[in-house]
Amino acid sequence: MEAKVKDPIRGYTRGCAFQLKSLAHTSFFMMNAVLTPLCFLLMKAVADAGGAQSGGVSVAAPAWVDASMAGLWSSTTLAVGIIGYQRYVGTLQYLATSVVPPAQVFLPIVAAAAMLGCVGVPVSWVTESVLKARFVPVAGLQLFGYCLAVLACVASAALLAGLFVLFSRATVYEPLILLPIWMLSGIVANTDSLPGVVRGIALFHPLTSAVRVAHASTLSAEVVGFSALSILLTVVYMIIAQRMMHIILRKAIQEGSLNLL
Image (cartoon, rainbow, N blue to C red):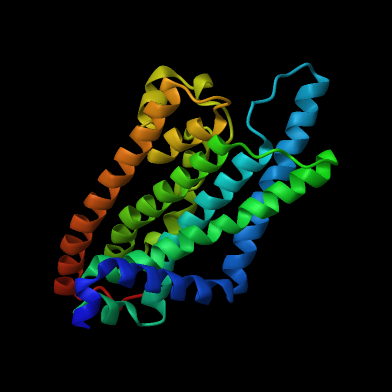
């Protein structure tokens, strides 16, 4: 036990690997990770086809990029909901009162659920390639932007997980955090079409900057700036999540709410 505390990186890695293996054998999580990006891509393909017929202009990034990120954020919402599942099966109180630091206990759980959304990358890319009857080229900025999105989603899941530990009924609000981020981050529509105030608010989420990087066609100072902003916000989210988890767990233990359905 002492070795795990002294080597948190190894603990996080092993914990994530174990949780990923467990989630991969659960049909509900796998279906969400596969079907969400698949359905998103098909709907986007229909919309792009309609826009082309009416003289509309499509975005520079291929559809698989947006579909993969949509699936990634969908898995992130399930990541915070998995805390409610731990409460349901009666293991939450034992995880919370473990001698291992809370971050090392809960981060692998929510990170694995969020990272399961990476399954959507090959699904989306293959589907778009089939629809276009050719191999869709993959640019380095698209992959880099997606990596930033993965980190942003893991940090977001860690931040939201604390609230799901504190409030036993918080799972009902899962759908409310799915669509707004889809809309504000630029996954559904370009953020340039949003009002100025809303566009500014959207930049406070690291996923928005990651999407802008993935949509970029060439490396520029703007892309570097968005990359730095996404990384900075991800680090800030993780720091806040760690501090908040300590406070919320202490309060939840005092109130005895960890084992309530």
